[in-house]
Structure formats: C-alpha cells, structure tokens
Length: 186
Ligand SMILES: [Cu+2]
Image (spheres, rainbow, N blue to C red):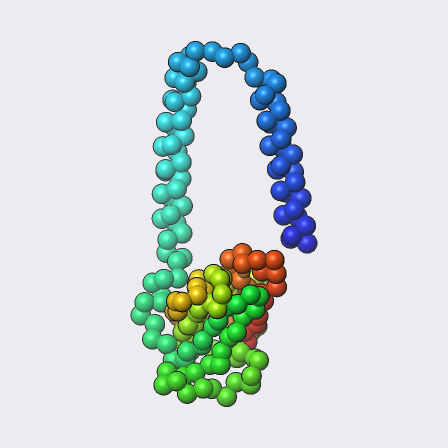
C-alpha cells in the first residue's frame, strides 16, 4: 500500500513539474533588465536565509538530545551478535557471550535477552545495506550501515520485550524491500 502511495505521489509530482515547465515556457513575460528583478528577489532571499537558519538551529537543538550515540559510548556489551547483510537477506546470530561462547539459540531464530547490552557486529557480503531495527510500533530503535569489508559495531540494550523487525535501510536492488528479518527479545 505504501509503495502504491509513493508511486502515486511520484506520478502527481512528475505531472506537476511537466505542467509548470509548459507554463513557464509559454506564459513567461518578455525578458526585462536583470536589475529590475534581482533587487527585490535578493532581499527576499536574504530574509528567507535568516529564517531558514533560525528554524534549523531551533530544530537541531530540540532534537539533538534524542540522538542515541551518547548512550552507546559508556555501554559495555554483554553479548555479541554477528550480522551479515547480503542480496537480499540478513544473516543474524548466533548470539555469543563476551568470551565468544555461542548461546543456546536454535538455528534460524534470534532471541536476545531483555535488559542486557548487546553489540551487533554488522557487515555485508556484497553491497552496502542498512541495518535497521524497528519495534512493534514501527519505530526505528537502532541502526547502522552494513558495508562489505567493514564491521560496524552497534551497541543497544533492549528494554521492551517483543518481536522486532530488521529492515534494510539502503536501496540495494530489485528485491531490497524483501530484506526483512525478525528478532525476539524476552
Ligand atoms: Cu536494501
């Protein structure tokens, strides 16, 4: 359904751009000396710039404290979860403790302990992917890049039990949208 809406919005946008182009081509007034137009426009542009900067600074200050990075710095992981993205699936786990001992997770299922700090060691086998963990409300809980040749460490402590969905956050080809996996936290 979302894809359908996205397609519709794209189509309406394309038609709007086409109509505006036609209107500009055929409805434009004859050329005038630049100075008669630019003076007024530059004044508007100057004010617009100041307003835009003010809005951006306010939004930045209001949202900065919600960034997850500060909470990651001091966190000492108790478990390690290797993650590998590939076209078009995720390989997650098995869960290991800090000494590298595998947990008793059944193959194919990923069950993470509630309230314990987990370090996802995220990489990719082919192209860049985006490792995003979403809660049951569809809110993004944690995310990092999955890149071939690199291991990105994502430290997170799950404080709410339930089923989490892993989605790819970077377009990686035709079946990108099928890169869905689940993690259970209990
Ligand atoms: Cu993808």
